[in-house]
Length: 255
Image (tube, rainbow, N blue to C red; front, side, top):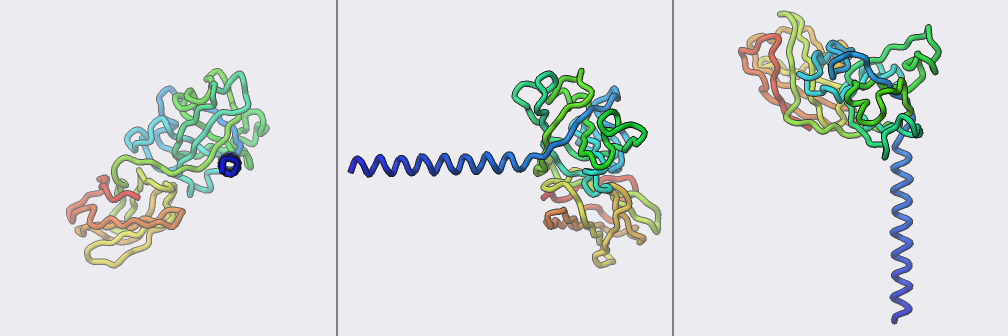
């Protein structure tokens, strides 16, 4: 009886050990290698007018936890809004002790500089995977005396406060909406808009996370259907009343 109990305890111990090893192996497989630098701008943002179209990153809620991505990661703007966990690794002088991580949102494009070698100045040259952080975010993972550090990164879900935001721009025959504060995958891959006098109208990507269609929606309440890269869709009905104006921002549902 006692021997049988010891045998069962041993089996349970090795099962727990095996599951722990599998979890550790899976965690290691999630991480990919890249490099990181930081912007030399004096404020806490990467840039005020970045390649994703978000404008002032503090107003759009991304702030200092924003990143410019090399073309390898930026994917012509489709990665805009996606979230990454980043940590400094394998450098005893520059990486902070314990390799703390930060969660970043892709908000800008880090352009290549083919006049410089990829390992000295041309950090964003294709096919390098590279992140340009704000000084404040960089300081949370590495010493700011470093010019460039080796990192690991992985995609994570975006945790957002409040609903998605829809900022409308355009003219009487050209309608554009900037979508920010997107949860879940963060990457918007399809958008539809509906007025009270129309059906659902597919919108095309203009640039970054700006979406457009050639239609007059003046005087109609507006609804939006947003789909992310994982295939999840959220519909926000009548987020803008019939008297909406260009330049206004409206709050919708969240993933």
